[in-house]
Length: 141
Image (cartoon, rainbow, N blue to C red):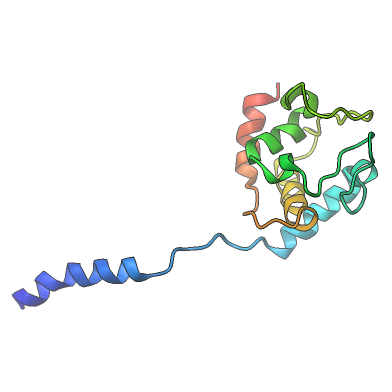
């Protein structure tokens, strides 16, 4: 019995260490469908249905460093508008994107998840509406 009590913690530790690390949850089809709906209603007219943008007028979302980059910056671009968030030396487009802080936290999370997943075709975890809420409280008056 003493031998079992001595080995039990070691066996438990080894079993726990041998398990594969957890992977991020897949983005749900509902989040992507909701994100597409928000994108179609609010973004597609300027950024185009396929995210290709319009040269010199509105940037493409596909193959974009901002879209594929830091989620905090990406969320702030939507909440505050690019001119308030992005560096001054960035490429300038004739159509200036306004803040879209009228969208709900869930809508912003869904549309950015959709853009990163379907348009940019990157594998990122879904954006959490709680993160949008925290950034809204911090940056939107």
